[in-house]
Image 1 (cartoon, protein in one colour):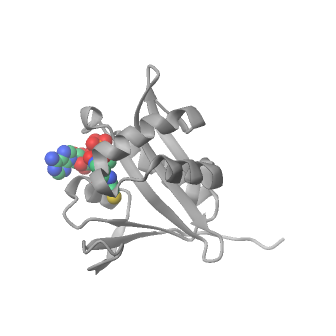
Image 2 (cartoon, rainbow, N blue to C red):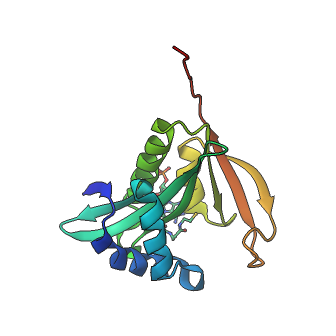
Length: 153
Ligand SMILES: CC(C)(COP(=O)(O)OP(=O)(O)OC[C@H]1O[C@@H](n2cnc3c(N)ncnc32)[C@H](O)[C@@H]1OP(=O)(O)O)[C@@H](O)C(=O)NCCC(=O)NCCS
């Protein structure tokens, strides 16, 4: 199993995993393509023998230096094998290396598996919003604080 940057050829498989993971709330193909265009350095896939088993997608808000974990999904047949954890870990590392001061994400409060991954990686619950995405569902905002040292020469 290998975690690597996503390529254009991966987007169809990523979309399948999105649909299996989020039903009506999944990103349509054109949104995945747009994310790929603007932030493919933070778009990772887990691949095994040519098959895409999972993906994670993030970005950095350059104004606030906040890194974001925007989406994470593992194919239902490949869950429970730490792929979600490995993908998130790798994205957090990339965001941290690019000088994010904190990393943020939102998760459904009942999503025990996802919350476990984030808590294990040092994310802390900050606030629950009743209607964060205007879909009448609650979302928990979680953040991981990073210690970033900047030296002036
Ligand atoms: C959430 C998701 C990405 C997890 O991926 P995964 O590869 O199966 O997760 P992992 O194997 O890394 O396991 C994550 C943790 O959940 C735990 N876990 C496994 N099954 C569990 C269960 N039924 N209930 C609670 N925790 C469980 C694991 O033990 C592990 O914790 P640990 O590292 O402390 O042992 C995957 O379930 C998924 O794609 N879900 C649908 C999309 C989604 O919810 N994405 C996240 C949106 S914020």
